[in-house]
Length: 399
Figure 1: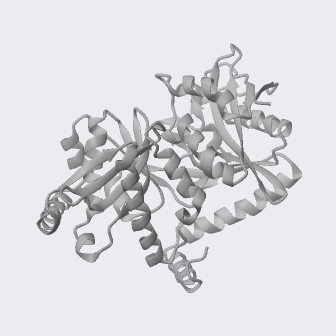
Figure 2: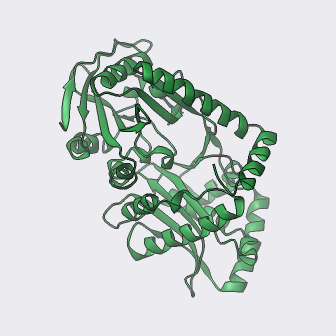
Figure 3: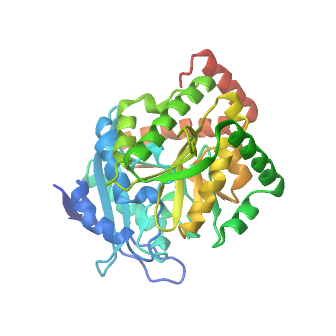
């Protein structure tokens, strides 16, 4: 069954609004959901992050999703007039004896939220969405929903999936962009930082010749940027004693699939020596008309290159490019890092929420909630974080 309508009524008005009644349409195949999905994401008033694009979900499910044994479960919540209001891109997989539905993309997507048809649709009462989800879970054998990296608010809109969740172990970091590139650069980067980077660019140019910012959305140039990322990041993970998530062949297949010229999923940026083609830094992300979301970044760790801060030089060029594309926001993903807090003027508070449906789901929610809380305590406590790092290094980079 690729699509089915299930009677799921959710009632819950936002202040000053009439009660919202949802009828939920369910798709268990991406191609069946594609027409309504593309219609929603193309809407002028749609509220979403680039991780909720159909093309992103398709690339993920064809590679990592398949390797995980996940199956799509796409829910479209319609109002009483039959108009689609929210689309929930979910994938169901087993965790032991428990069937869990998660946002498509897992940890490779920094922001999970519904695709809202409009800002008004984002005002759907959390109780109404929860009621529809529980009915969906019962109808499709889902024991629990695991909603990770849910923004409390996104583009100044509330996110009903985040209601009742626990603070996530880490937040995401972003910035608002203006219409003038140089004015935006001056706002996001201090005068002292800009002066230091101009000097470092001179050092890099003196050693390697002119450098330039290149952007690729597919083809051989994107392949070269992705290959440089994998090499540079593997070296960095090894240095830090961390496991490399892209040692997984399915993860590499995902990058290859998303990086295809006709996929239109990844936007790949690099700081490159014009004459030799050497790639000093990479920044890879997903984008839509309004936002660029950074997924992956790396830099050449050879000491003479690293001291020139190629990643920061590329970040300057990235911001200029996004303003030039007419985008109004960008984010640098989840997790604490100096370059994020130095540049970003917007902290995107995230929650993790487990919604149990069955008795097994309640047991899963208890364990997953405890693990998430422990991770958050460690990541938010510098002493515990240092201790965890030493323990990880002693175990040879294991989790």
